[in-house]
Amino acid sequence: RRRRAVRGGRRRGSPGPSPLTGSLPQALVDDTEDVSLDFGSEEELALRKAKIRHPLATFFHLFFRVSAIITYLFCDWFSNSFVACFVTILLLLSFDFWSVKNVTGRLLVGLRWWNQIDEDGKSHWVFEAKRV
Image: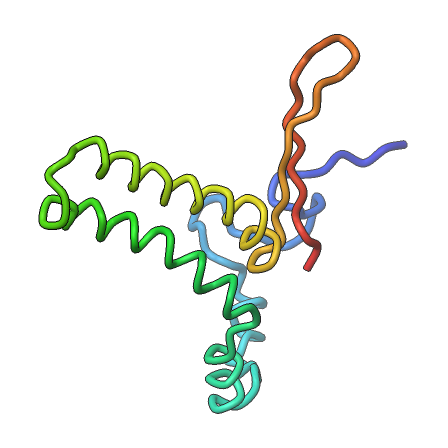
């Protein structure tokens, strides 16, 4: 005989919130106590956060975006040509897209994606993520 999953992951008859009061049964409340979890020393956490694993990838991840924004804001100071400003910003954002898709997406967060076309001619997007 198969058991069906009950909403919330509990089985029938297990203690849970009371339907009338919405609180936990008294036996569970009395047995609970504050527990401190040790996640390591604060200095160790600070060192892990301060250390950048891929500094060159991080630099280009920020460089193309920030330079596109700065170019957008201050392009009128350097050039009176709208077309030159537009093309410069478009190129910077294109470089940003390429670097995020092909380099920083893989190195910093472990994501890859591409398009495959099957025998019927239908387009399928494939997404992969690095297992943690």
